[in-house]
Amino acid sequence: WVYKVKLNRDGSIERFKARFVVCGYSQVKGIDYHQSFSATMRATSLRILLSLAAGERLKLEHFDVTNAFTQADIDTDVYIDPPAGYPQYEGKVLKLKLSLYGTKQASRMWQLKLRSKLLEMGFSNSEHDPCLFSRRSKNGIMLIGVYVDDIIVAHNNKAELDWFTKTFTGPHGFNAKHLGPLNWFLGMG
Image 1: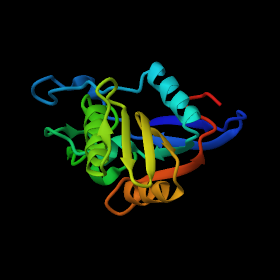
Image 2: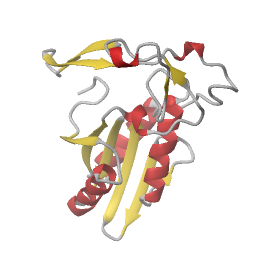
Image 3: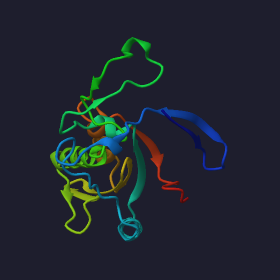
């Protein structure tokens, strides 16, 4: 178990978090995983996204995907010891059905699942940064920047944002929260 205190922007405590993390250091490449690389949005890309949004007068929205890694499938059979505090599983081994924090491939599997969903929604992936996406429609433009599970959506049409929110977080989307207008991102406000 990994415990964390999540803070508000002003430094006060927002909530206490507990997350079960697999000890992936025992995984063997080629057996338990094949690839582990996953990109994160470059600082330059974030600056370009914010500059484009300012130049085009796009509104910026913030989405946060809840337990992102656990929303992706896992590509190999991985067996783990059960977490402490679950006596009904003592002496047993559990097989993962989905990625879990700590596995070598979890971040990559999440990025592939997210990319697949955004492409399915009609977004194009940037050739220069795998964490940038764009979509033009007759109703407007949307730009998306992804930093693991934090997502910036730049848009110029409320109906398009509503469509994105419904499709991205709906029954066939992800467990994610629309945090409202962007005012705090990666410790910057």
